[in-house]
Amino acid sequence: AQVLYEDNHLLILNKPVGVLSQMDKTGDLSIIELAAQYIKIKFEKPGEVFIRAVQRLDRPVSGCIILTRTSKATERMSKLIRDRKVSKTYHALSTRKPPKVQDRLVHHLVKDTTKNKVSVHARPKPDSKEAILNYHLISDSNDIYRLKVDLETGRPHQIRTQLSHIGCPVIGDFKYGDKSRQKDRSICLHSHTTSFIHPVRKTEILVSAPYPNNPNWDLFSAES
Image 1 (cartoon, rainbow, N blue to C red):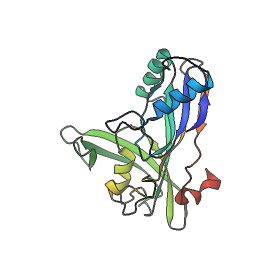
Image 2: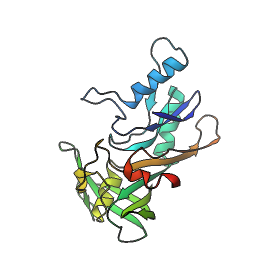
Image 3: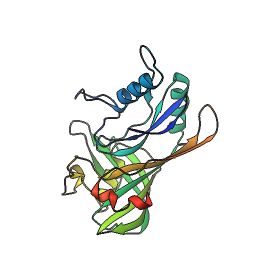
């Protein structure tokens, strides 16, 4: 994983496709273990390394992920995220042109935890959560459309389901209606930039993650 920003409090990485944000029942290595190994080696730290993930990215998604290195930073960073003071921009690729060049989508999502799948509804349902995003069609190349997505809420599978609902599934996202499968089992959704006021230093942090190495993203790599 590429290091995008690092200090005594925070570590922001470009999460590769296929890497877990946190350990799950598969027992596969997560970004937390990779970060702990990196810090252990770099600073020759004996024993346990403190590292926490304050946000998650789905396994097939790449890009910026914020990790914290102290309990104080964890607490403050979590509060910034809860208070929606962390700005996150995603880029998504689809083979379908969105119905409008830009739009604000408001839906109500219900998560089926047994299937790990989310359904989209126009009106509130029992156990539904409101999901809001803004998208903008930035460019297209070879019949692939690149969308910039800004989240107003952070719900599981939110971008994937809301874009699929408007007929614009993310490339490789078989779960939500795209018919293609990527060799690396990725989907073309990338956490491109994140910005916030540093929870300890109070300086402005703005970080961008380069696109993954993938033929679809390569069409736009000069613009990333």
